[in-house]
Length: 173
Image (cartoon, rainbow, N blue to C red):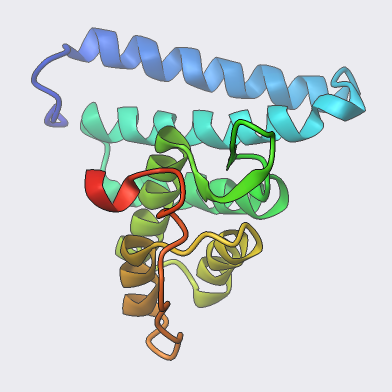
């Protein structure tokens, strides 16, 4: 018998969330197989699939699944991040100019995936895919870099964060 970790919700609620997210993932896969997704929506649907898998994993862990159950899902999340995340979540200023920073929820999601990649000791080649996404987006963040350099100690430190101009991430986190 597994031990439920989330003490706010009961196991029935968590299992219902798990089933919904898993069914949603399967529906999206089916839509891709049948070419139902419009070309201009592919990136947004794939990004949403990555987020769905991330939250599915979090919910499964909260319901008592072992941390190793993340590994398979994490591989798929990393691939989706690598192929579809870049540029999608970059914050835009009031003039519509993309900034080298993420909004709060996408910042959190990247932080979670980076952290899980480190904690689950994914292969360096896969971890580098996440690093490449951050680099392509031009995001410079000390917390991201702390995690990255823990795994890739030869990486040069950043001089300055890219969040200072618009978004107060250093002050919030």
